[in-house]
Amino acid sequence: MDLDTLLIRYFGTADPRATGAETLASGIERCQVDLGLEQDRGKRFALWAMLYLLGSAPDLDVAFENEEDREAARNFMDLLAASEGNEVS
Image (cartoon, rainbow, N blue to C red; front, side, top):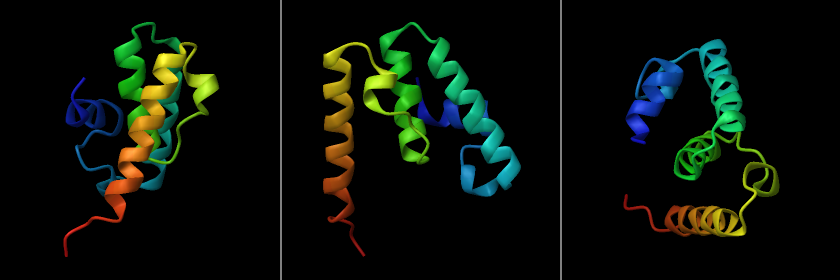
């Protein structure tokens, strides 16, 4: 799943900052519903990652049954946290 495609699907634009609060909330809610229904592990991870970037991801034990998926999500969070301190001005 391509991030831009997901953003356009749920928010109507590849830049969710360009949407209003109501559109953002509605897109997040639809994404959370789809996350709960999705059976494909890769697609679930992509949806969870987007929600995480938007500050709306469920806890790992809720989002992922598989420990490998939870570990991948932890690695994703660690990589993002490490990159926050390495931004180029």
